[in-house]
Length: 465
Image 1 (tube, rainbow, N blue to C red):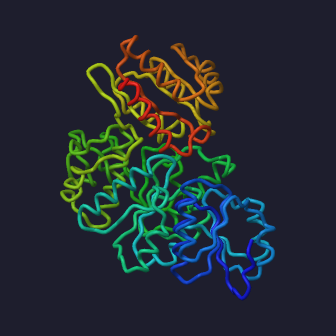
Image 2 (image 1 turned 180 degrees about the vertical axis):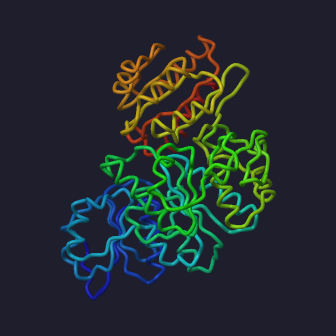
Image 3 (image 1 turned 90 degrees about the vertical axis):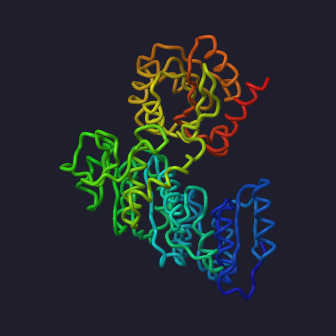
């Protein structure tokens, strides 16, 4: 690596994905000396590298994140911005901290320039991306400049960079994962939303208590808080939570319950005794999406919108891809892409939103979680299961031990599954194929988006032949 003589302060960015790219670009715009380190290389990384080098940022790809590379310049380092994928328990991080080096996340870096703007911080095991996208849509449709940012795929530092270019925001609607919260301790939103809570990412956070406390910190640091009363763990942990607004998708709770937002028997969205709008204007299916709507509505009301303004904006809302997305439908068969379902609970919610039994496609890299409830739901509402990928045999064993009696088919790849599952559905006269993996994508795909897009391509090819 090059020596940087006469440079008093260096800012390192570790990782050259989207967040690393925008962190580097933002720091450069602040006249900082920036060095980026990336362990991999790809076409996307090369494009980012070229753009950053053109503005004077040093970029080193195929370079491992090891303490020894920082030693020659350790006294000149101002801060190191780490990717959310790097744990604070990482050996190199510990060594750098021991030397007194400031370690921050990209979200915290952007917060420094954006804290004068009102934030909505949204976290949760499932549902947070939909709530983020939906709330941003509601606000923007009502002439409030409130873009979605964070874990939804648009780095916070992109908006911090634009803020420096005099592009002003009214609100920032930020999806924040547990990884981001863990390395971004300073974030203090105006409104915090906690969508759901089930065991996830325990390979990183070790215990369910640690995972809970990380997410709870965001809510504690928020001025106003919105919680999902339908989530059992949140409901049962209410004594550990700061005071806030609660929502429920149930229609029998009434105004005398703990909940501030709920659904009436005649399917109106209620704010206590006030009817805001009828649910028929909302097109997303599933009880979990009604919960998402109520949380977004509660936030929009706190921001100052009327029920009419919210309902009018829902007319133009289209759900994000890979979430119960119908990708093929004719008179005899519907195929649904739910690639975003990366854990058991997400798939349970998806199955519950479909009124009839389906053929399920699952597989990938398995996460820790309560698979027993998942197996029980599959026994109740699936006609057959097609498994693929790294965890296929493990999942098959779960199903067998749980008493699943219908057909289970095991394949190596998703491509092999698609070819057979469509033929099986036609032969057995089954009407719905649901691709809801219940696992992460990282055994065979870069992320759930790539997985979902490949599934859509495979289905498209099957019907074009």
